Length: 154
Image (cartoon, rainbow, N blue to C red):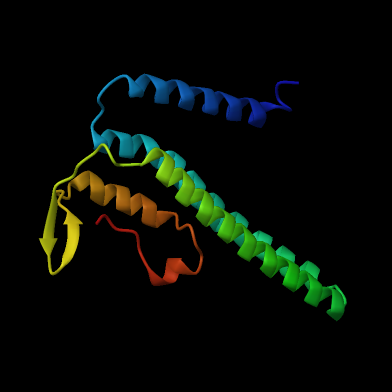
């Protein structure tokens, strides 16, 4: 019984440890670089899922739609396009509404310096930022962008 559900149990254990760790760290003032290192495994996991799963879903949808009749393909394409447009509009309005409601970042102030007409938040690049970028570049989140760009600390 335990061997059959080992992945499920380890997932729940990881979620519980993450919630407990997050609640405990919320009570203390933790430096930003520590939070970045704590969040790195989760970020790498999500990046690897995006890298592996999205191409599989895309090729599966293409192979399934190629087996349909041309008239049904047109209807499916219009339905998918309409769905994408509708969900983007809903997401935009939802994001605007929640942003107006909770005003994220309104209580924080940052030191901003002007350079060449562009505003940049001034922060010293440390060696831990370089290692974080190295790990992020090891596991890309997009197979196309992997060949075009690299993640770097700004």
